[in-house]
Structure formats: C-alpha cells, structure tokens
Length: 174
Image (cartoon, helix red, strand yellow):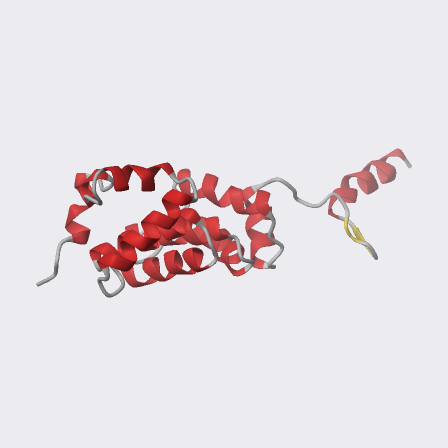
C-alpha cells in the first residue's frame, strides 16, 4: 500500500484536473517563452526578454519582445529595433529597425523618439529628413531623455552618440 501511495504522490506534479495543470512550470525561460507565444504578456514577462538578449539568446528574446510589442509595450519595440539593427537573432534589417523605432515614437516613447530621430537624421532605414529628426530628438530631450540632451548640447553631431564601431552602418551607400 505504501508503494502505491508513493507512486501516486510522484505523479501529482504532472497531473491535471478540470482546473488545469497542477504545479505548472513557473519562473523559467521556457515558461516565459510559452506565455509570450500565447500572448500572455505583462511588464515582468517583457523584462525577461532583456535578460534573454543579454545572455545571448536573441532568438527567444525576439519571441518575447514581439509579443510584448504587439501588446503595446514600447520598450519591447525599441529592443526589437536594436535586435534588427544589429542582426541579433535574425537578419540585419535597418528598415525593420526604423519601423520599430517609429512605432514606439508614435506611441510617445522617449527612446523611440530619439532613435527615430537619429534614423531620420542619418537616412538609416527611412528617407533622410534631418529637420524632422532634430524635432524628434528635441521631443525626447523635453521628455527628459539625457542622451537626447547630450546630442542637443553637441549641436546634433551624431558622433557624440554613435560608437565608432557602428560608423560603417550609417555611411552613405553612394
């Protein structure tokens, strides 16, 4: 009898009843990815995308950020831009990167405004429009974004905010 009870107890974590799975997998990367794939997003889940990308798992970070961006989290949009702009977990795609920044900017995100402003000033992933780009940088500065204020103070010299290693990306193609 003791063996039967012990065997039954061992099966409890995997057992399911009419209310769902007992003792579900929680607080793991796998459970976060599964939640994102089901569209069950919240701020904590979206933050886990940051940890995934910082650990080098860009493909799974994309899954989380894509779901979070679809739910309106602008921070996830700017992370998708960063991934696309650097070819992390997918192809290098400046057009997609710029589209993510614009979406975040259109929703009022200061980082999105700044990034979209830079894209416009460079003509990177979008048609070049330096005046509109500066307006967006100015908006981001008014929103309190320090890097935007730094760019203003440098008279919009893009080298102030661009690492030398990235200059190849922003060079004119012709």
